[in-house]
Image 1 (cartoon, rainbow, N blue to C red):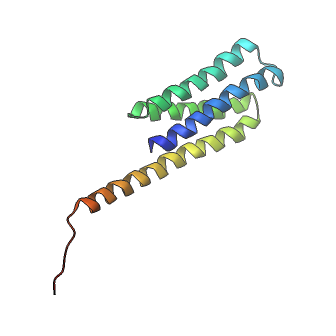
Image 2 (tube, rainbow, N blue to C red):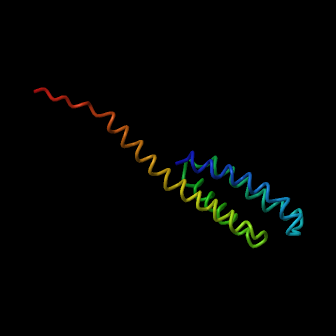
Image 3 (tube, rainbow, N blue to C red):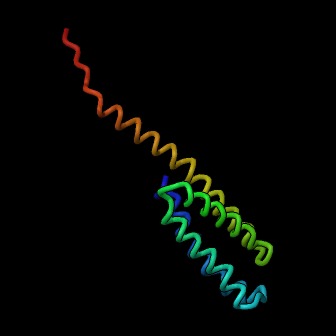
Length: 119
């Protein structure tokens, strides 16, 4: 589950860094505000990817998703991109849990001694 979620957060950090010049040039946001918001969210995404070993990383990652969608109020295309990354985030968590459960079941199955039938 961690690997899928960290991939989503890594690409999202890149997206958030690239949104900074868009906010400055197209949305006419002051550079100091755009840098602090976008790069702050980008650093938070990287930080949460590093903290995915415990619950804190997932909480911070979810906060990044909310912030990314919220950027849509400044740059409207971020509604679409933010919702896309939020759905990737949810999918990474759901599919990651299924993969972890399947791996655990496979390890339990392979640890059991093989049954032999002699006729």
